[in-house]
Length: 102
Image (tube, rainbow, N blue to C red; front, top):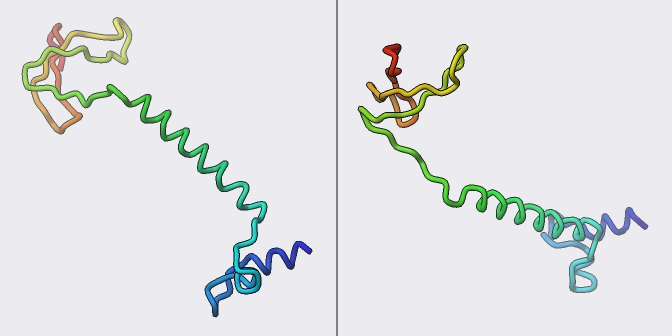
């Protein structure tokens, strides 16, 4: 029974349609057809959640001489006041920390 359902619901390479469509004129409803709407529903929900999380987000642009806070991965304060002294790319900058380090 499962083999026949699989066979009758698979497109034939010569006709381009399933044997069931040729015989009864419509597509057979399979268990796979029940899974697809659920997957689409989950996909759409995840896209809406991502859109909601990004809403209001903005790309930050900095200019030469802007004062910024720089993350310090060494010991001491985690954030240090710095000034941009060179722009290497749209997301990479050379900064000079207020205490003089580059």
